[in-house]
Image 1 (cartoon, rainbow, N blue to C red):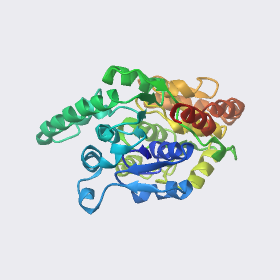
Image 2: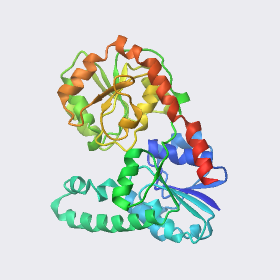
Image 3: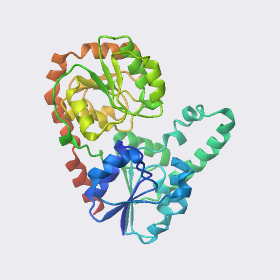
Length: 358
């Protein structure tokens, strides 16, 4: 038996897309996850294959991380006779100790940063009385994760940025395999003058900085095409500004349409792992206003396919970049954007993963 094992299909996000892309590239591999959430339904429609969910009515009461840990650390006996397993995510690799033989391959989007270099940041978000429990949990996960990664036969990182993290966190040397992007799904449609953000609405994505910037530019339009835990807070921050629009999660077809009609996209996360959104933007011939750190240094060419701002990001810098991205400048970058995106197309990923796994 051969498996692609991932934490959970939570939303129609990048990691979920890569999980299904792995299965498509590896015929005969069964996809196994802890849970499939309704928000991931559109991905499954396009996938067409079967996905096994380990969780049940009882485990669902535990919630995301705890359910995944229970499923993979204690309920993955089916892996005992596996021939080849491709692991991905934070918690699925914990099942590697159940695999008695065969090849063990890990495709890493990132180590769990909340248990490593960003532990203090996430710890501060909990009430004081829960912080000791958070410390115990992250110490346990950190130790189990390191042992799991070190037990792999092959470790793949989705970017050079993540390769460095794995070296620091786990003491392993990974190979870089950029994730697949369905560049054919995107294309230049028009320039309707608006700027688009597709980053998940979480603190480290810094969409709040974008909202604050567009509050100072009422003549410029921001469209936020995503959801996340910070949605309500960001809507409140925008305070009903007519030039800022929140769409929530959209279908693949709707997303491609919004990207294809934008002037440029905005993507300014803190030390992003890789970031598929900038590549999707470039595939549509749209430049990226990003940040000069993390995975964007591997995708966006500053001055050619977009503008990379200082990691010490501020509202003024975002405003200046947006104002400088005129229709003429965006149009001049179109050809370079489209050519750059081809380096990350799905076919490149599929050929490489088959050569490594099959």
